[in-house]
Image (cartoon, rainbow, N blue to C red):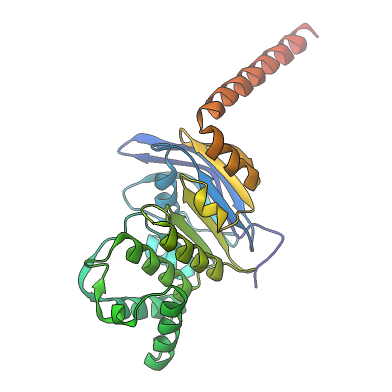
Length: 271
């Protein structure tokens, strides 16, 4: 049972480097059960790197703490994190020729549940997911993402989330490359998967998906850090004003903090 007194997911002072180049420079997040958070920011700010590092990408050097339901998981490989209930929806899902959608999903669901899922039960769940996401049943026999359109790949990512029932879902730019109709269907799937006992972090550039997937909290990620957090209105402000104003505001706040620290030090020295 989820402990409502502690975050379902948290990361603390997370730093991520690739080939000794630091990309994420100290990220702190707490997300409680039942919440949907959005992580927004300009290109190159490190959002996707953060998502991949949280999921356990082996190419990244990670410092700091990652907690799932209060347990540290930063030392676990990606597949163990997935078994515990983490899920990453990819910005660019890869094709796997030779592996059918149905076989892939049944293997994934069985691994998540710790036991083989009976075929009849699995087919019932699979086709219910197909119906919810308006995916033709013929896709069950097709090779995973092989020849799929961008919208079809993203629907399949959300189908995985529906079937796997993760406790914490990371969705890395799920809205990327979607037309308005596909965006609505994918958003419906995200909302269907969300519930009182799980949490979602939605990484995106744009406010448009947040018209359909309403976030409880919006974070702005710039230069490897979360520079501001707020309610859904923050996403609307970003859509209208862009990110440049935050650069200026952050610089002003940092200067004010530095000035206050210097003044306090002077006062202490004189006292």
